[in-house]
Image (cartoon, rainbow, N blue to C red; front, side):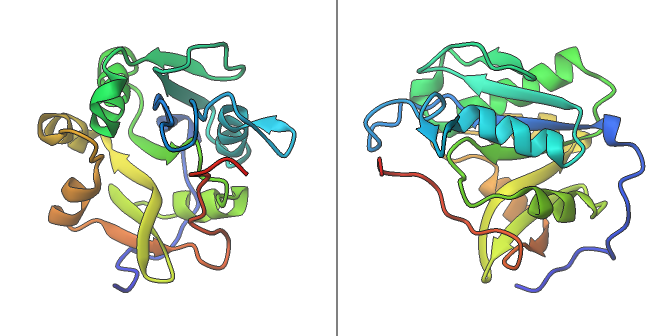
Length: 192
């Protein structure tokens, strides 16, 4: 599907955008939680937080569950229901943003194991002012996604199992931004 977003423009108030890293999973196929795994001399969770900050996002939150630990430069959200699937982590993150940070207007959600993500790709994604945005790579829908705060409560009510925001974004006509020239959809699903 073609990029349906409006023309890119500079993000006017980066303080109104938060970053949310989903890092609660137990990593069953991976052999353990991915958040603390060191990849290219950096923990995956620290890499995700760094990329979000480098893209201009001052407020970064990390949803943890199977592994709990300190994450510098980010606020940790504990998801005690992480075993039920990704939906519980999205829910925990959005509920935290709804209840604790009313100034946040949009959130960019990324996965802790998205090793193909780059700072330039995040900057490009955030330059679009849409309220529901999906990243695409060679026409394949991927992460990260951007969700405006008016969608958080309706999305929370729809979340179930191991499916995140994908169905909500599809049924509500999310804009698509092709990041193929700046990043890949590569994730770390098996230990190298």
